[in-house]
Image (cartoon, rainbow, N blue to C red; front, side, top):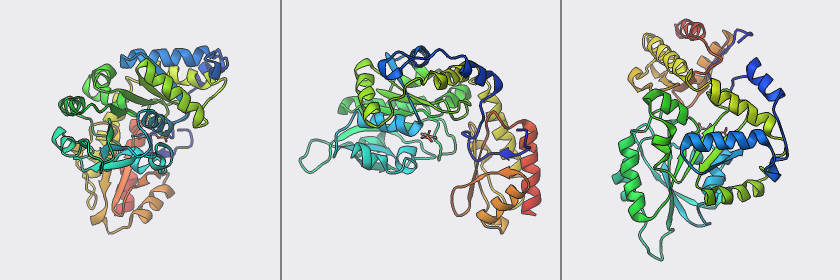
Length: 345
Ligand SMILES: *Cc1c(COP(=O)(O)O)cnc(C)c1O
């Protein structure tokens, strides 16, 4: 970045590139509430095809994508199953309770990953005392799990449990492209096991705004109505959708660089006395490390980093998160490691 700042707080801090801004400026637009925005329609068709589903719906944010998808597949008073550290439960401002009106059965995963037996144990059987299980939600990659990638076997086995119980499955795929680039699998390989999926364009893909909900035709029609109800109907949104199309055409394969930079960062951190990181757990673009042995509190460490132009995020009393993205180069990572070493010692 021109300011020389190395901003590793999140992969949402990226700025649209000149090429992306040009695509936005030149976007064909229409009124998307009337389905007449050619750029939005094109983006939705692109992402539906990418995921191997009937249709997709462009929405303002990843939170809106998750919440509309959950709202459209549940009734008030239903129960949904998700992992304890998952994004919709922890980071969506109480929307599960406020908007969908569901209760959540939380599972303790390993770095966000659950197995089929854990799900089988909590799926409700018909009983007047129970809130019926209406949806099983997974997150891939898993944000608080450290950008962990779901093994396909676990997803497949959970799908079997879901199928026999007649319960649909939702994928929070905010960073699904990171999982695909890390494994070589396609979005379809993952999406085939889910009734509803999401994708965020404003994370490592570098668009300023926007997410998609992806699924079968009838589900998307229902989601469309809830998007309007949630206040998410947009008009000449093609200006924004054009950035998303550009992101999908230019910024997917390069996620491999972010993954490499995250590994570089983790290896650098591992060599600093007082900091602890599990380098082998860094599978994509997220690095969590522990500062317990550094003799510094998280806020003080973050403040010292900031004074040297390096930004990271505190995620617990001893834990800091750093996320790599397209506005941080290899040089930026080397600088972050150097500054970390200086401020810890
Ligand atoms: C960022 C993120 C979202 C969506 O967040 P918004 O800020 O609403 O776009 C959803 N799920 C996961 C796993 C995320 O990391």
